[in-house]
Length: 79
Image (spheres, rainbow, N blue to C red):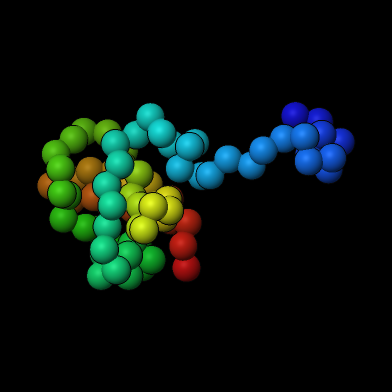
């Protein structure tokens, strides 16, 4: 995408969640969000062997990897 196209508004901005649409997705509550902010692991709500997109109120907040029946946040997008 050319910078001129962005400046002219000719391109749309897509939500971050669209970039990880191929990953499993799990919505977390406010308590879990506080843990994610600190990089702390969560109990895995669903089994899986690949990365999981963690969302809060529909927004991507982290990408986590499963480790021993827990999700360990590896990329955290909230403070």
